[in-house]
Length: 483
Image (tube, rainbow, N blue to C red; front, side, top):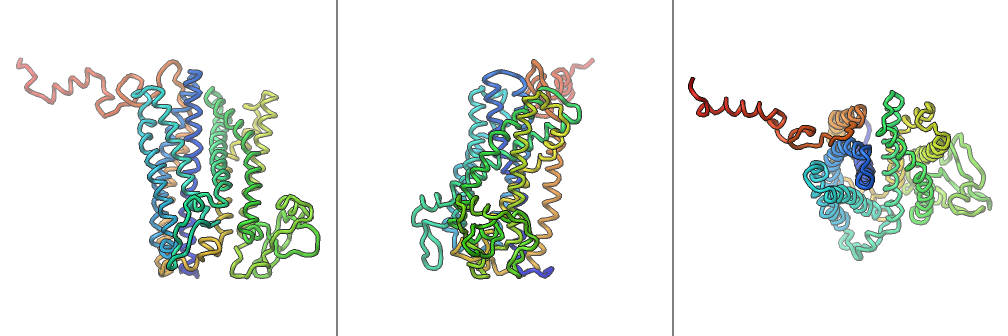
């Protein structure tokens, strides 16, 4: 269909669904931890700005959490429909890991989510804070199991091949495979940065539109502190992750660098820009810096890295894609560092909230964290090709025996439904953000339950007591006296 094989369409379908899905868990992870910080600050200081921000971002968290759950279910089904041979080969390892996620993270989140969302005035402050913390912990535990499974596919160990299937021989080695610690740290910090940019971009929009209240300033300030402190840390984690990739997935790193062959004794150049050509085995229009590749990748002046021509053609990832997806991720990461440093300078100058160029930059950087995460996932997943389990099981052997027309049709349906459903959800989120935090000076916010300053738990709770009494009398004629 459309000139693509069933394999190519199945890969497109999974790439599309995971690209939509990963947006929501990333923001969920970051917002959950942000809510913990806000509630902790509220309990410690009793400053109403923290309480107002908590309830504002709690609404956004709830909607985002729901969309994350729904979008994630689809991918689980795809393992059975489109990738049945992969499930047959590696299901003894990936199946239990995903089950552990449900038994730990999902149950933890589900158990405390109701208290977190609706228990502000129904349970004590300590229990409510614990519920928020448990939900935040659940999001991180969920990421841990998902990344353990995916990292094993990248750097498999602790398994044996029995009757053509991978079976676990050592669960500790399966879970704590060589790339797992780096990928867990990299993804978790990326989620925090994406959320900081999301929060900061929202605040910048309000400041540019004249909403200069305390909650807006506070969430803008907190997001800028997060960027200043964490963005450089992410760069260091990325460096360690790159060294790990060089050791365990050299073909991926060669494709990322667009490095085709080693020539002479000179160190490896770093190609800043260019267009890798898989057929011609070269990089067109390249702009490079001599020896910088060796310095970054081996931390030596003359170090060599594996080249794409060292690997058979059928084992090479698509350098054209990962070369640019990696540079998009790194470029956005550098802009995050610039944004954090600029914010520190403006804070020192006491112009953080009024510098329009900076506010516009912050607003346009709002989605940069999500884009960087998507670019990073494209890099790591396409860079693993042509393997589903790196060096062990090929993607071509993983796909179900499907007709290309069937896969293409379902892909079209996914695109239409996803844009309709999740597009509507995202539009609703943006409307919530546009309304901004509700300031409740000296009053409890509208968090549910019967009462003057709360939203109703059931329809009649919204009516005044006298109105409800009149309605009850009208419905019960035996209580009326004859006149």
